[in-house]
Amino acid sequence: MKTNYIHQSLRLAAGAALLALVLAACGKPPKPGEPTATDATPVVPVPSSESPSSGTPPPGAAEPAPSPAPDAPPPTEPSAVPKPTAGNEPSLDSMHVAQPSAKISVPVDLRYQFDAEPLPNQPVTLHLAAVSRVDGANLHVSVKQVEGLQVASGPLEIQKASAAGVYRQQLSVTRSAAGPDHLRVLVTMDMAAGNGFGYFTVPLTTGNPPQKLESVKQH
Image 1 (cartoon, helix red, strand yellow):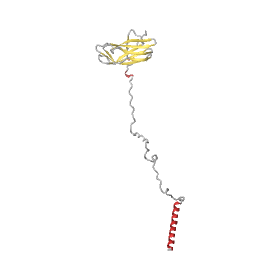
Image 2: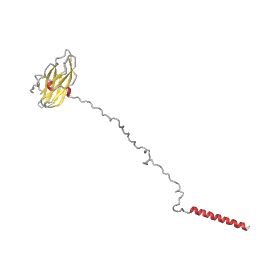
Image 3: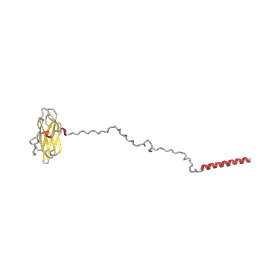
Image 4: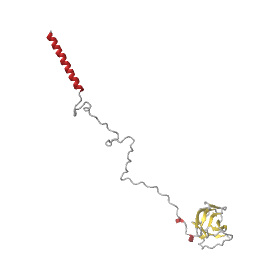
């Protein structure tokens, strides 16, 4: 019985020694170069949304504008509206000279020309050209309205007129069968010496030949 007691004591001592060795091994620090539990777990990199190698652009990035097709024609600008020219205006030498009245004080010569014979009830274009012989202001050319004559245009008004300046106007004129055989044109202009005015007579016919300009004395 004493032998069994000795054997049991040896087993307990051996178990205690083994337990001490296990505890010592767990608390022992790792040697340099030995892998630890944290080193054994690989770190997986998380792809960033701003990585240059990513094929998807970051949110909010502007997409490049599509390049135009190589065969596409260039955009055309709207064509400018053609400006009126004086190509349809008669030359000054081919126009007739309107006859001034006896009482005239404006140093302006008036020329005229019809596009066609002014037949009754047929509109015709009348070209007027006022030629100032001195510098002036507020040059005004208007056709006197009378019964049997229709003029579809307003007066010609020039704020500043220069010597030898030619100021043109086109009017649509229609006379009735019982209308006048001529029309009267009033011309006024302000000058340094005062206001000048005068009436000119334009016959409603195209048979008058061109005449030379006659000087008009200023009163």
